[in-house]
Image 1 (cartoon, rainbow, N blue to C red):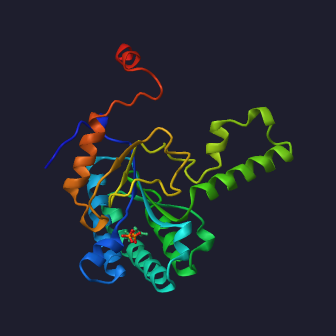
Image 2: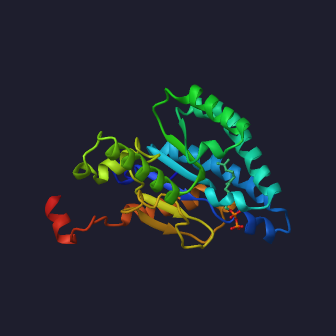
Length: 246
Ligand code: FPP
């Protein structure tokens, strides 16, 4: 089993799980079969991130724009999500994983919200990996609601206009309690961010790979982490400045 220098691993890993439909189509199967296989990949990757000691794993499971997909696919995805959340609780308890959701929860069906609430109750005290599912999530929408919150605070006099800062905006995002992602992985060969964590990914390293999500194995995850460990993160500084700080 591969080992990585713990101090170099991303503290927060975000993944755009893409290519379920194409994987299924290539095998002459229905798209939902690809999503089902994608759930198996999710289980494996969550387990491995937890084992490696990664602090936060955020998965883009359903975007605000995905509601426009055919009704049958949306229903199938909601039903898979519900089942996944319910069935994963014992494993999350065993692995000390805390479950979390970001996105517009009001748009989700009531039965999915019930499972989310149940998972919050069950895993809320866990102190290991924080597993966040982005559900009905759109980053622009998230930023708009943050701006509205700040505007309301300014209008009511609770906040001085001059005190509006990056930290203040972050306080209004769904991710307020989380560090920014260090690494974003997107599978299936697409090189886009697709309205995912636009603010939070400002300094993330980006990693794109060709494999579709149902075939994203632990070995593929290790390859991405290996690349990440070898990158020099400069945060706007020069390479020489970074060396001087060491
Ligand atoms: C993108 O593939 C994937 C999605 C829109 C949904 C991701 C959902 C899962 C992996 C399963 C459920 C998730 C959890 C956490 C239980 P696509 O359908 O856009 O594939 P395509 O681009 O090949 O059509």
